[in-house]
Image 1 (cartoon, rainbow, N blue to C red):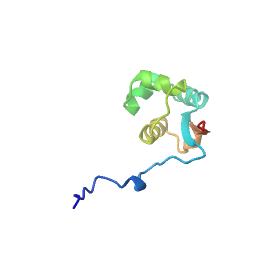
Image 2: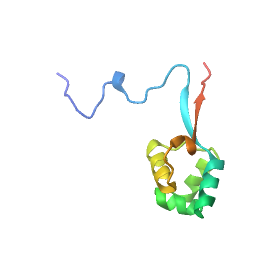
Image 3: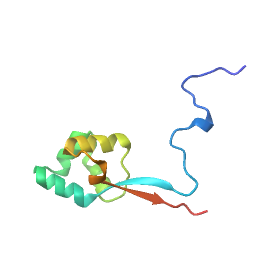
Length: 98
């Protein structure tokens, strides 16, 4: 009889499975970020320290090279005093070639 590991999920119960029509990607709205940083009189380096990431990672987010995780998005919103995610992030649906 196979052992039952409570940490191991059944492959059908995976969280965040891909949809067949495309996948949703969240990107940082660079213009909104710069506007907010200017309003607060802060820099990207300050934001990186507040969020707990490197300045290089913030730069990759700004340039669209990376997509922030949910945890990073929440930390950024809190650090910048933004209440709605839409004010700082854009959602895109990426279609994968078949």
